[in-house]
Length: 443
Image (cartoon, rainbow, N blue to C red; front, side, top):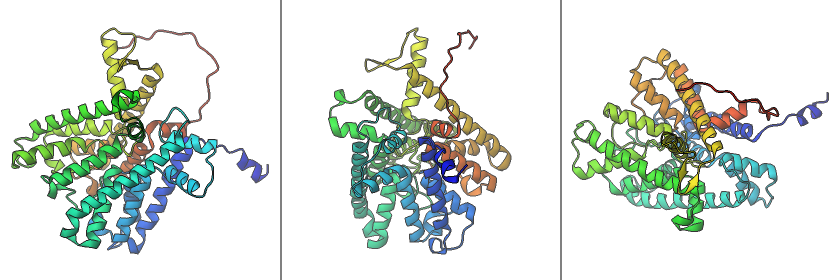
């Protein structure tokens, strides 16, 4: 067989292409971060790979100090990787094609559809255009506002760079900060708290929701997905804030010593950041056990579909809750906003949760053998990596070589998506035979 004929027969599916684009971005980032110009002191290949993986998957877990061990060039590489990883390499590929005046073919539209988890091919190019306009616009605006706060403190060059770095990191839910204690120095600063949280909430709510809001500007006319995401986000954030406020109120190592106003700001910030943002304004390792359990759940749930965040996605979590509630009430179907949830959504949601839990528990199992750390730290680290959150109780910097690879795999699975990765690795074929049904006792 001729080589040309052989390559023509190789068919690469959209999930495989999306998976490979992330791998290519990580590889390029690793090489750039390993260069002498990127670091103050030489770092190992594994640390460069870990940092590139963390930045591209918009996680924020670090094994070397972003602000102290990397030069401004290295920090710029991290910033670009966060932008590419958050918005998706395919988004920038489409942008280049559009700038060249080329048309996007059917395969390109299918790739966009897969990248944003959409069910229809219609309006894909328009969605990408609005996404890029909104993302760059809000990042520029946020940089300008942060510059007002940080330029007087750090000077024009470093102040502007710091503002741009944190604006991009926040909108893309990356969690990288130029300070080792993240944003703890600004625990009670209203400007930083409001702006940073607005950035990662808007980035994590989902581009399709933002597009829907921009197009309709009326809650009643929004799609069912947008309504569920908006109400679900508000409910989860309020419940988490109240829980953390009560749980940490007397904890002198977190918010116990703060005045009431700062307590509320810290509770709000730490309630919304676990859903893949990764910033922290209090010491995570000093939080109460109940707070750690809640944050672990929030990290697993993650952000919205077609967003800069990861996790199983809030809508997946809500679909399972609604279907479970309907089953317990004896209803034939789950209904929300007068719309029934199709059975295929439940099947997809169950598949996502099962694959995700399998990946996380496999990671926990391996880490429990390779790492000399409290089991609570290991569980938290695994959930943080899968949710591409970036919060840590202190284990990241102490990871063994095997441990670093485990965390990198979890970050990659979390960002690419468990179902997308499963599709990329599996050979799918449509079942042509219908089998007789049988009963199995469950529960």
